[in-house]
Length: 135
Image (cartoon, rainbow, N blue to C red; front, side, top):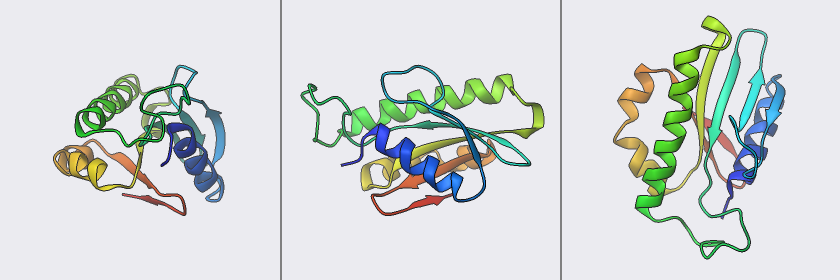
């Protein structure tokens, strides 16, 4: 099971391998956009969510989030990306994304809003233990 911290780390590594400079990489106990990376043409603001709790003291640690929790987490991620889209911190060079574990429950929720995500140009980073893919 990937925690939010795992997701952030894997996406940061993925972006670095594609010549992005990582400007911010937060853990679950820090506030703000989880990952900010810059390339020659854009600054990317990414909100990440895991598939289990990152807190070893949580009752949910090691257990997958249920559908309602997944919906809630995706809603929080969307709110964070909408704030970035609305404020355009670097003008037209502002890009946003959501990084999620690549599992059935996450994909089921995202499938219901995928057309809107495409219209808003919100990148999806799907993360497994072995790879990161972008939509």
